[in-house]
Amino acid sequence: MSVLTFTERGIFCPVGNFFIDPWAPVDRALITHGHSDHARPGHRRYLATAPAAPVIRHRLGGIALDTIAYGERRRIGDALVSFHPAGHVPGSAQIRIEVAGEVWVVSGDYKTEADGLSEPFEPVRAHAFVSECTFGLPVFNWAPQAQVLAGIDDWWAANAAEGRFSLLGAYALGKAQRLLAGVDAGIGPILTHGAIEATCAVMRAQGIALPPTVPVTPETDLKAHAGALVLAPPSALGGPWARRFGAAATGFASGWMALRGVRRRRGADRGFVLSDHADWSGLNTAIRETGAERVFVTHGYTSVFRRWLADQGYDAEIVRTAYEGETLDSAEDAP
Image 1: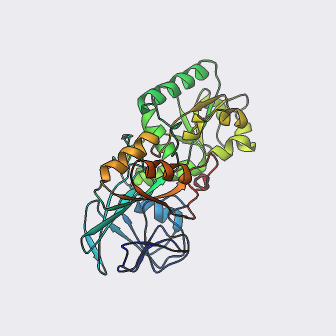
Image 2: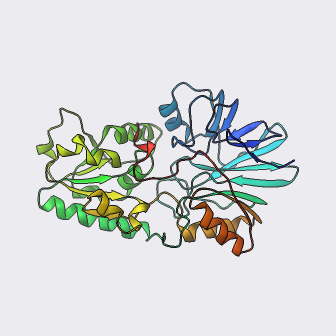
């Protein structure tokens, strides 16, 4: 019997009778992280890391959620399960499943560059690895985070000197907090859209340090915050919410900014290539470090990446999932 099977509900472990990030309601769901294409409502029981739990509860309400520490081993049926840092967002995990000495790892979403906010990615040895490949093309090669953040600081400072707001599109969970933790808050005030502020409040309550922010409400006196950096979900930048800031500079922080024409189509002044997913090099390094001979690829450029892996000697297959993956306008815009 295979350690994992791939079903219409999600990735299933038969001997443990549990699913990993299922997209249809199940009895027991092991959740890699709190993004809504991985943590969905309707399951009877949930298991996630302790640092991921507050955001999952915030998003899904009064669910039956148990928590597990990174590296803690727990037997579920005849499977031995443990969660390991994925580096994607705070609390995100790869899930290791061992059955009769055979080890499979499900990556969830991951990135290999430490961002100073999320628990850094840790390679996990396995016989089989289920890997995302959202950015599984050679064109996607990220610059170091410090370089990208310095560019954002320069852009913001130049706009502030002209008295203009800097509207920056970023996902409400993970990307926004990564930006908050990394930009130079001494340049000026930082304003936040309600969806981002709500997630920041959850993270602050669990002890994650973030600089002060001012939530934007109908009562906010924008004149008192001239030159501020304004963080908002990408979908908010093209609507009435953003128009209240007048002739503001606009930008997006996303891995998709690496594609020529995306920023132009969105009408943004600047595009900053910053992703919470592994780039081409990161994907290849992570897979190599697992030692796995079998690799299953999910959401993203699966056909291209599978062919590449097969050419490198891996037994590579595509797994069809209901994961949406990262898009410029994402369900993660929701609070």
